[in-house]
Image (cartoon, rainbow, N blue to C red; front, side, top):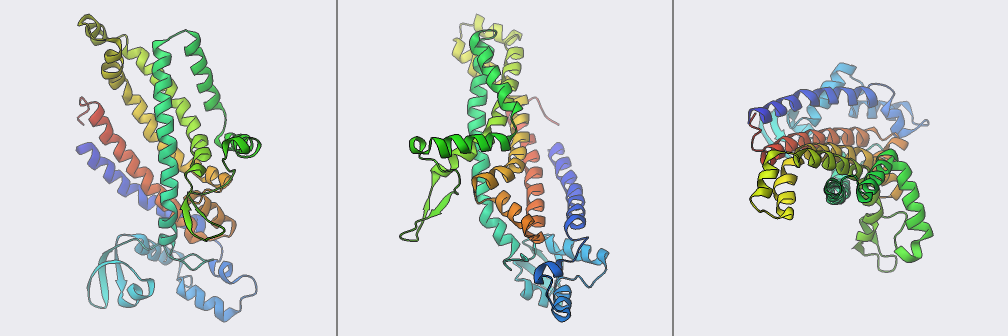
Length: 347
């Protein structure tokens, strides 16, 4: 419990730093008002937009106002609450303090609320990341266990060769190869498309339908590298555990090889694997940005890259902050998993 509280405290210290970095990178320089109206905007329009976005204030005040907007606990006037359509519980008079859903401001291009845009895209990214990690965990742990059991055989060497190849190849390179072969050259056999999202629109009826097949190629591509890492870690950890005294005792008691391997050895070998899984899940969220763009998967990554191309900074800033919160949450979850898998970890 103490360790979890320390993690939460650390997160509270990290997030202000992320906020400051994001603000300086995307709001501290340049003129967002000019980005909104273009080069032909008149001075009056520019002045109105700058006032609306607090760009007429000093930079330090702009930063404090941005922090107040994105913070779940903040001060807002009645006018602010109505204008920004803030959702939460507010108490007080003209100046209210409240517990609210963070306000990430509005897209420069579409004028939609950034929170709504990200909330719409987040499920697709999470589904892609979870599917890729499930694929990587299942086959990575299986390959690692088989390699450890069949140490120094052709099976072991083949599994490790595949693992090394998976680690060596960058995700974007694998994505291009996979998309070309399975989505283009072998399309008539696989039925898989180069691009596509979780939901498609029927061209005839205009109805939205679930297209699970579009998940196959991006999830496979995203899962290749973590699969290779998990396989190698599982193998080395299993080899170490299989030499322990309690394994020999289990065999001496007459337990079957299957029971010893999967009930005793594998459970004790999973700690470093869990570390890799949680760490790589965080990596998947970052790697998904490029994979989503290549495969046309409509998630956080694709809308962020599109927003960068259009200099739509509120979307980009919101996506970075959301990713930071998710990564911190994954680290805290990892600590909890350690304690479930290995009860010896108390602090």
